[in-house]
View 1 (cartoon, rainbow, N blue to C red):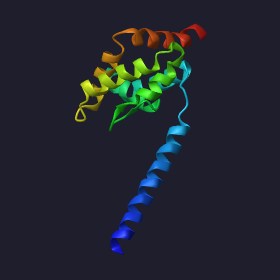
View 2: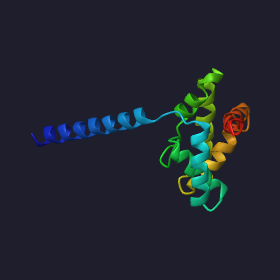
View 3: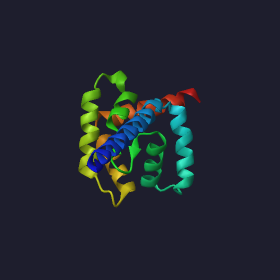
View 4: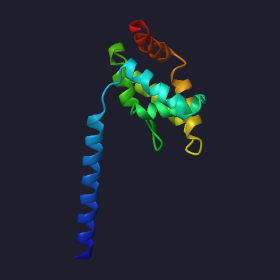
Length: 137
């Protein structure tokens, strides 16, 4: 009887956790270049202009990073879906995320994984995305 109660409690907790994470995931919205620039300014101030800390702050604010698992490759791919290479981009982000994973130095992990992922074509897409705001100015 106690074992059954324990199983019911465990399954209930699991379902609640799934519901919460599903709700949180559904709230995420694609960022605009303007939103990125606003968050970037806040992060620069918070991190005292230190590059790795600024980057990690920014991608956390954008919902693209967690300290537990690093970059969210699916969300990043959604931002650049117009390039019709979502699967390839997800593979690159996941590879770089794993290769640079260092939970004891989170800022460095975020920075090095970003540098790895943006060393190729994806880097050009990021520059194009960010230049959208500059054109609006």
